[in-house]
Length: 433
Ligand code: TRP
Image (cartoon, rainbow, N blue to C red):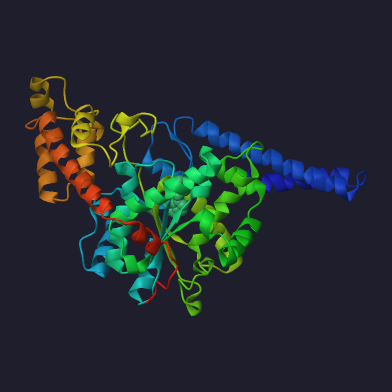
């Protein structure tokens, strides 16, 4: 990659050599070309170095090394002392996703905790792009986690349904993304959010007023070169794709909410965003822009990717129904899918007893470590299965029980969500009361 000082040096040489014979306009043009070539170079190096591992908000592929993602993105790892501090401040055990390292990276989480400790409020912001009718277990994770944070810190939550994003990126019909959005809202409500302290909103329905003013301010700080290098955009992307990052950025700033959500005098309220690490590029850009607009940089708490049933390299994909467990799968489907998951168990009982299972490659064990709350039982399974005294069949059987129970519970909660409840959650109203 050409570094920035080198680019400036090249420009200066060109300007010096040519300014005597060219007009100012031409020199400006040359400068622009050098910038463009440098941007191109940055993109090329990026795609070369990440041939194996691609992580953008739209593409996650290759063998993902979560440590490398942190390093590349420049976020911090969540360490034990930070988890201890969360537990101390909230006077409760950290959520399993946090204490077992699934939410593993952050930006400024310590600052949010400082703010909370000094008695100041903050709010949580998360979202969902409605690309499918039914969610899979991986989709539920950020919402279950956000619900825990809301409960533990007693703070408001805003949830953006980016129906616009899926129209732009997935080429879904506008009306269809709105319909899917509303269906997804029911699943989100079923995660147990506090009705008096949660605002869910669709991008299409909400953008206007102060929100749009902020979108324009944000978009005005982002050059095409910056968008290209952050997202790997090329000249072929539509300008709708260029503007969307500002729409996802706006809810990170409390002043975007015109709806008396946040009282005026508390204009600049700190924001914490729970999300999967692939969303980091959006918020890296948001954080870059914030100081220029006198806004507080949003803090982030970021998760790894939820593994597909077909193994750590596989992606959970809508076109392969067996790659994930959907929350409308029947008990029989769940059993069938778990039984065909990739495992780290040995080929025969004899080898299993001798060598034990390879837990790193074992999807049923990994799923248990997300969903089995009981630490002692998980530890027991880890030891027994890892040392060969337990079989893959035993572990799968336990996982089927745990997942079926979660899915069943969710299904019942969702069935109880009425249209009136959806409307109530989506009605702007004061949250800081
Ligand atoms: N882009 C996200 C998706 O495709 C949706 C989203 C919008 C989001 N705002 C967010 C996710 C904030 C996490 C945090 O699903």
